[in-house]
Length: 346
Image (cartoon, rainbow, N blue to C red; front, side, top):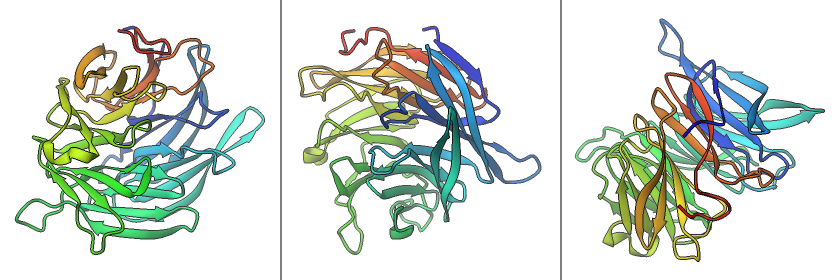
């Protein structure tokens, strides 16, 4: 697949996220960091780009003192302007987009000094953070307070922390969260339980659990990715039976993103997932009849693909436009998944 547009960025890229807010759906945020030579420290940036006529328009960038490993836009119009939450090597950073004519002006809305943060997710005003310390924390970003913190993952038989590579909300219930870590375990938590103990512990992953996302059109369904090069589909009502299905994709699955416009697997249309598969490039997996298969493979990167997201811009002539990014070659690519045009018929 030939990219519609590509650009080499000044930093190693960890993620790319399209803004879901109306009026800003052609805006994307690229995040990453560079290691400071001679120092064990990271210096990060969030770089903003706009898709125009299937090309990339340069906008502003915000340099930060800490490395940025993950970022998520707030999904609703609760705030007047788009807000981006960033997981940083020193905690979390909230960025707000202001406009001055045609110029976007990102600024730091709030910075919380905390542990080395690896993943981040939103539910209304709450931010969920997975940390290198093996902990999960929940922050109220309106009150600027920490609501919850607990040790979620550690290697069996020891007190050694396991990095929480991913933690995400049930899109329909802020009390339920899923975490995955380097201990190869995925856990379902109910934040109302005190002291915190997992509702379910899933041991199906053969290596560390690196990514996951809840299906926004299905209250019972979510997907996870792992270093074991498999993506798995889960039903919260039958976790004890293992995943509904899985698919070997040829690369550690660092990002999992549901296509936002299509119906869930039990609807009238197929659903599909965009995956950032590290050394395996970027791929699209189709879900049909409780089965998964790879239907598209993008190999335009020369390094580890860590970021991937779907465009939500309804004004684009064609659907299926995605952005992917890679680490060492610092490359951002925009491409179109073949066969998608408002419905998945591949």
